[in-house]
Image (cartoon, rainbow, N blue to C red):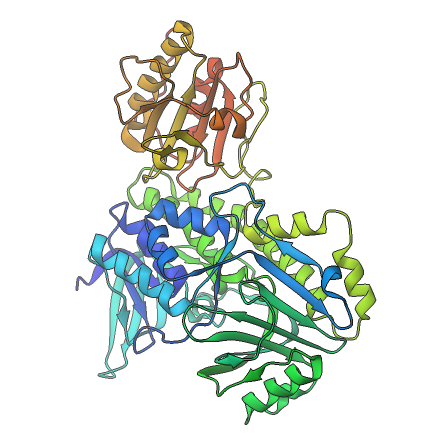
Length: 540
């Protein structure tokens, strides 16, 4: 093992693994350490939402996730005394994505998929039993102190950058002196257990809600079920968790029989956030930077999206393709998303765990106009955007997704199937040119701007012609027709219109304009990357 590298990642859970994937695929040398003796064998988080699955498709692991997960259409809210046809639902089946549902998965299985992919494609394995204890940073890098828990010896390791993905009790955050401020909002217990006589649809996540208690019950892949509990007293019987859970199940009238737990835990629910996501060459990611109620199952998803946002930027800085000020956009973009996740979790928390508030008041929240759609879009991650922090090019605006929005997928070719997400599955930016069919002026403009972007940014920007027309400068890997008109529909491109769309490495729109203004998108890339050469004037 080298005594120095580009990035040291502390914490090899889902966040650290995603950060490692996104850095490694861009050629960044890294070390991934974790104080645990080995991989986790417990489930912990169990939901993967639509935007996360789109990210996994980009990384190349979505197909393996699907093999070890169960699709879930959504959540059912069983309020005490409510008839079956009255029960509110958050139904994910209408989402505009290839993943109109969410997946239930054992976190240990999911982490294993990521570790296998990381090893198979990049030769990287987490180093377990390596406990980060301290750090000191200077202008050129960070020196970490690492305890080998097997031998008891402490060594130092030098990295240019450090990513702290070591959870809510982050020692990286503590040693860096970053405050973690928030409130305690409740207590939660959970177990993985075999269940009998459960007479409700186990494909859904079932919330059972009483005046002073709450229980979640759903089937996981394999034999086990996940059962959550929050109430005003039964959890104090921590010496007999099965009995505590059975008491609540009986009290709320679920009618199921709970076996001996395979695994059980209890913790305080916090809404907390770091005062800063960065201190010099140290960056916090995931739970190290923010935590919130688990209601809605957004925590792990949002935390992995933090890593997905950070890693491509850090890779660009390491490669000297961007100034280190680019890293400041990580917090600027992700902190508001963290606030949105907290708000989304709170909206569900206030329905299922607002003990002391009347059941009727909580039911009323589910009947507010737009409640289901708003909740589903927030929890799925599809409505998260950077509109307030990503400014588009200074040209006339167009309809459709704009700078900072999630880039929607679209099927382009029927057979063999080809999608927009196939075109952007690489480590850089993608510049899409959508000309009017047969318009020579549009094709010439696309060719000119593609040549310009190659001159200024090289292969960090991939230019793609979305057209059935052939033209020099776009080979078969970079030319494709919109056979179904789905891209035009998803990006609101009207008949007789020609567009240019810039997509960032994290699958967000960097800019969207008329094709005639496409050179402005070349300039837009310089918001994130350092041009290799001065931008020349485009020939007319």
